[in-house]
Image (cartoon, rainbow, N blue to C red; front, side, top):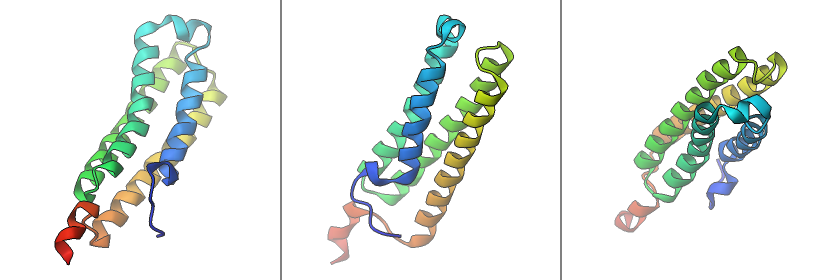
Length: 133
């Protein structure tokens, strides 16, 4: 795996950004937009995915990064659950639902893969580099 210098270069962050664009567009539609509780909760969850990936990366410690990736993965699960509510209420149609679920599933797999890689890599993170010399 090539060294990643910015969180914006992390592929699961890029996919989370795509998911955020989609969720914001879907939750801006008529009846979905009027369900303030669900709209705001799903938006907070999707922002949480991107934010936790970025924050974990910037912590510069691998264990912390893994912890934040796990939180991001949990937020993706929250989005999926909320999408079921949106589908059941008729705020999204079956095709929209399935497309977003596919993207969410891909993001969860990417997050899990990155967490597994980091756990197996033996890398402790940048903040520990000074102690290695």
